[in-house]
Length: 101
Image (cartoon, rainbow, N blue to C red; front, side, top):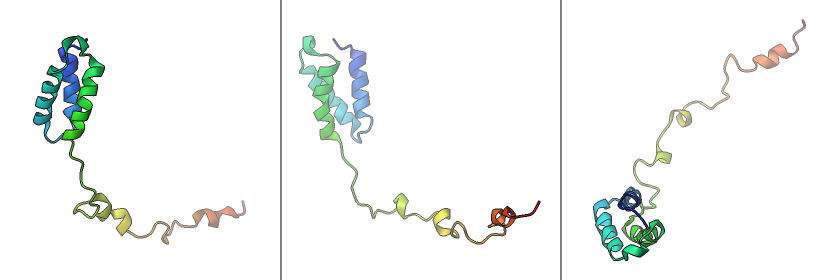
């Protein structure tokens, strides 16, 4: 037997990532009201709401050319000089490797 707190928690978890949260919550409560009280448990509630959540989910577009995409922004690392560019410190280990003691 699922308590009302269990059902409310399940509804809030399933609706957390949905843009039309209110519509999903209303439809979820209506779907759960149709299940007989003796059969309503956490598993039955989840199975009833699983498909309902998929119907209310709007996947983001796959347009990778959108403005502001992270992989198209400039960065200090990509725009800077190459790593390993000549530097006064470059090669110090090699210069001191064969030093006579």
